[in-house]
Image (cartoon, rainbow, N blue to C red; front, side, top):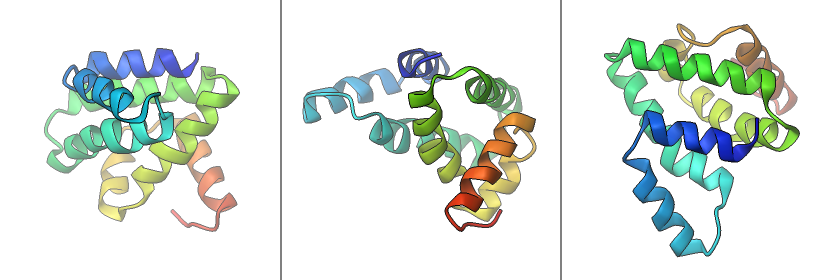
Length: 121
């Protein structure tokens, strides 16, 4: 799985981000993947977690995140870890809600990444 697959899937889960992605490319002249995930995709996921209402959608998204953790190429693996997983850990309350949906591989990657950079979960 590559970053293009990931972004395409995210636009399926969040159709409104397609416009934001297009605007981002126009603004920067290229797609900056970490910024796209940090500023466009993750706010949508954080909002879902804050509301904690659409549990079916959250389950589907986090099942997909598990697939990303297992099947991504090195580039997507790195970008996903330093953006999506870090952002989930930035707020203890959000991470507690996310833990209900995070599966084994994704959680292990999160713990490994956070410990590598001196964070605690």
